[in-house]
Image 1 (cartoon, rainbow, N blue to C red):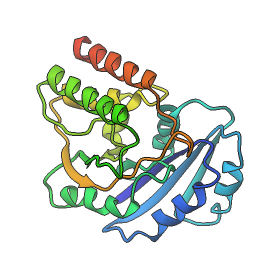
Image 2 (image 1 turned 90 degrees about the horizontal axis):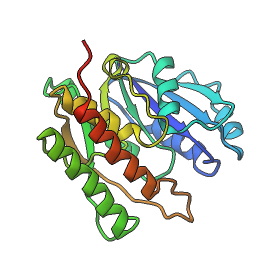
Image 3 (image 1 turned 90 degrees about the vertical axis):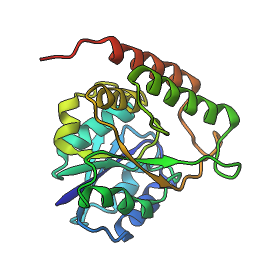
Image 4 (image 1 turned 45 degrees about the vertical axis):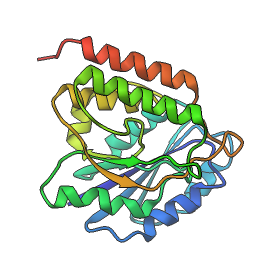
Length: 231
């Protein structure tokens, strides 16, 4: 079995190299590949990524202009060759060492879709409103789809590559998290959740998500709830 780790990168010249090194150092219970997509960075991120172009486990792709996280992941999924895919943001907020824990329920035959669930604490939360916004969006999804998940906006969503492609995620930005979850829940697919570690960075350190992304997430959840299933 091959796991494709999808790494969207935008203006992360300071962290890009460390991100790939961290992923390459993890011992996985299966074969892995890393598909990194530079999403039109305006700094030296692409030059930093190119220092890994000779590594056989790393595939590099570049967008000439910024299209958003969802678009970068869509490009990465199309280029990936793995049976399963999972996203790893190049922002230093997640611990690559948690990824094998996500894959364990798949290998044990317990699940096809696994989410890494964050527990926010005073040392790990960006702000009160960020945490409340995340909880509010998750609550909305649970109400709309009669489910009980704990962390909709988590970056760690592991699922079969073909399933991701079948869901036809069209959101170009951060809204892809809500669209993906809504489409899974609407199909009756309840993610298996495992706890992960998380440390949010500040706006000064480069955090990009804003309150407008939360509004878009709520709109996407509502849209998918009322949209008729395609045959």
